[in-house]
Length: 408
Image (tube, rainbow, N blue to C red; front, side, top):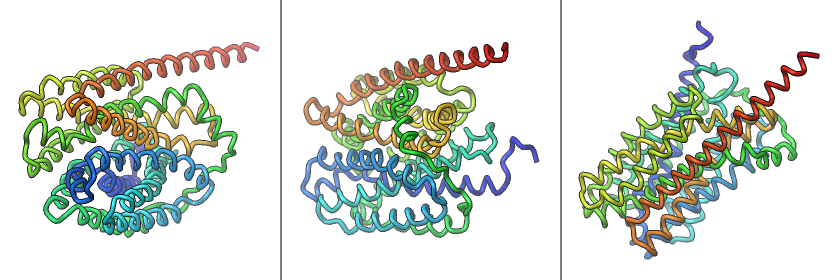
């Protein structure tokens, strides 16, 4: 077999990780389509329920690097099974929540489990056993679990929540967790052991200039999208005057387009993706800001919304490969931690985006989230440009230094 090709076992493993991220993504994002139902049932404002999205993302962003660092030296197989079980329990608690405080707690617990699981799944996708030529494909497939959760899981969860009550949505994600646990028991490799890394390495990773810039690439891009996406249901209903019963259909179409976004991201990642992202983020800014103008018509607004979904996941695979590449250059022992930074930065972006979106929606009006999101996308483009230039400079200096040593 060609070494640049994936074996059947590797393909099956990638597919199982796709199923895992599908279950995780459905649990995380289904709540976006149920903000109105939860707000009405728990007697809270839309902005207050929207803070559940921010709380989830903050818990994810803080808990993931800490737990990943602590658990990096252990065999990943039993840890993953334990975390999937914890994920199931947390979703059951969400299903049993009948007040805001319990639901808030259950979402934080879900985020803690999900963060490490996503990090492990992506780490396996960049494992040395996966051919370099196929890492972009492998990561895009694993990330596509989240996009398919947008296509199938989130619209289905929204429909179930609107028809049978939002509690039933979390019972459904609990069942998805059980299915994932059963599959993972037989598919996840039993011999994946991390590398013991010192606290010095962990701290060094976080304060390294290249990592700081790289971390904010997906953060700012996702924040730009989630300033709008967190309140997309409200925009569809209140600004575009589309009845709530059609919201799940709009989210379904949005999800279908986001699958294309993920496929594009996989191709970009395999060909020096960071150099291209800076231009894509400018396109993202134009799309997001356009909703402010196109909202006068359902048809033109839908074009803006669907174009928004085309760029939402483009940076995922590139960011993952970029983080691991930087770790291997500067802190090889912190590879596990580096692999966890993509979902961390994404959820940090979700937290920022949903929080700022809430402030804008409350104080300025729903439609203003569009141009604010555009400003964040332009910032993402600028940061990407700086990160790319810095990395090129470091590589050039390293190469010239190695050549200088050879002369002697």
